[in-house]
Amino acid sequence: MAEKRDYYEVLGISRQASADEIKRAYRKKAKQYHPDVNKEPGAEEKFKEVQEAYEVLSDPNKKATYDRFGHAAFEQGAGNGGAGGFGGFGFEDVDLGDIFGSFFGGGARSRQRNNGPRRGEDRLMRLNIDFMEAVKGVKKDIKITYDAPCSHCNGSGAKNPNDVQTCSRCGGRGTIQQQQRSPFGTFVTETTCPDCNGTGKVVKEKCPHCHGRGYETKTVTVQLDIPAGINSNQQLRVAGKGGRGVNGGPNGDLFVEIQVGSHPHFKRDGRNIHITVPVSNVDATLGCEVDVPTVQGDVTVKIPAGTQSGTILRLKGKGVKDLHSSNYGDEMVRIEVKIPTKLSSEEKELYQKLSKLSKKKESIFDAFKRQFKK
Image (cartoon, rainbow, N blue to C red; front, top):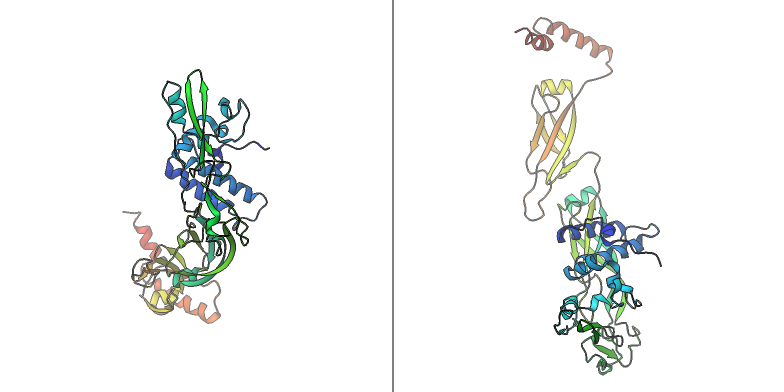
């Protein structure tokens, strides 16, 4: 069996990482290796590795155990000397406070395992949309494969309700206790009941439709209503389409992270839109009106006489709609004055006449040079 990598290394964080840093690292890695996104060989194994690391490091108790004993703390069925030299006990089921308390003469208290209904894990997927779809909003059909409670047994896994019985071995607790004597005293460990696998229930006769699993794998098409103004990395929630619940608990949710494509001319900055509009040097000098494209359609804009290249004109309310209100951003129009590189003979003659006229007064360059002679 391949040696497990350090959980901190898997998530790419330090051992001093905070809970928020652990969560952010998990979400980043989960997105990177999610099978719905990453089709490269080995991506699914890495995704499972990331999930396993997060399951431990996101739980303060499990994290403390792992920091102390490493992977050995979570190994099951190890021989003597396994699990860090503690005789191979399954540490995810052991109250370490009870064990070490018993070393000093204290009696161990039993711990009830939570075998009640638990909500499933949330899932994450990414969806790519076009620039204008994000600006205007769009409805997208997405296919989702998830595990739904079996419609015949309602998730119990039993053929009939009476076939679900309390586990006789653990009495419905989901755990069994074992006492161990040592020179330091008696201590008690709790492990998952092998008969009911921690559920506290056993099924006498399994449901013939789901074969006792309690769930059915379904693929459904869901219409996702993407609101106008959404931006990259923002998420939409699809309730109940995440990981399946445990012991009859509800499914988690599916979060769809939106990735917005670029546009050849529009550049987005929050709610504002930036665009560069070319005008000729003649139009910039004399002034003109041009129809400027916006994300809401063309708008006639007056270019004042004498407009310089790089001038920015603001079109109020012609940007992107705010997600949480009816307000709109603005469009910033940057004027780029274009100098012709080829002239007809008539144009050249006119420019020469203009040059002669300009020599009768101080040129722009002469005015610039005069500032250095003061």
